[in-house]
Image (cartoon, rainbow, N blue to C red):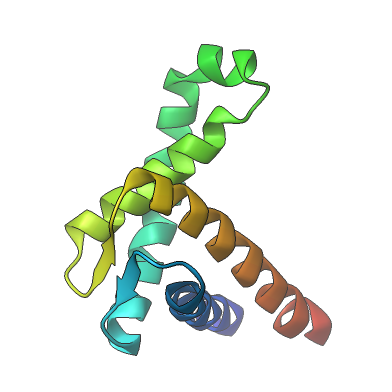
Length: 116
């Protein structure tokens, strides 16, 4: 349970870092980043598998690159849904989702995986 909380906080830190790296993504404060990280995680667990399944033919045709579009679309949708977190366009969402996944993966590898 503690590991899950640590990963959640690290994802919020990664989201705050993305706001500095990608223009067009704004987070009001750390509390908004915590909520946004939680919602992004829930969307990735609940909605993303359904979208990947529905778009499987185009994903296969593009050799998996369409999943980047799905990630960006979901990132942008969460930004439009939540107050305190905004993403200006779907293209910015794709770039932000890529940066978010890289930063959160690196932070998790350093902090969480390094303690095992």
